[in-house]
Length: 77
Image (cartoon, rainbow, N blue to C red; front, side):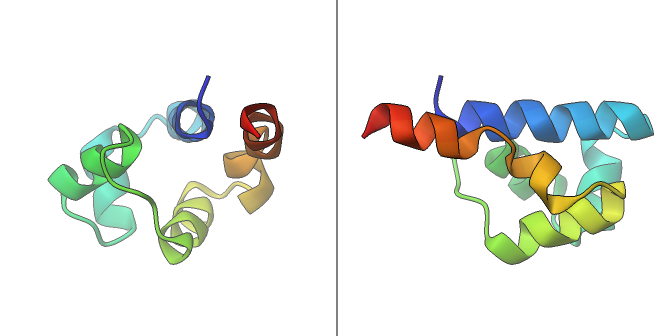
């Protein structure tokens, strides 16, 4: 599993807890729905500031969004 898949799973889980869909989440962090989708599906890299804003909007600790990524990066090294 790639770090992008881990990140996507964490983001989708946080969105589900809030019962937010992509469009609502995109609007909350100032992205277009198309750009949000591109980021979420790994076609475009997330910017750190977007992930911070996402954590704030979803009211989750930043660490929850990136949980498990270090293990994936270490596994691919």
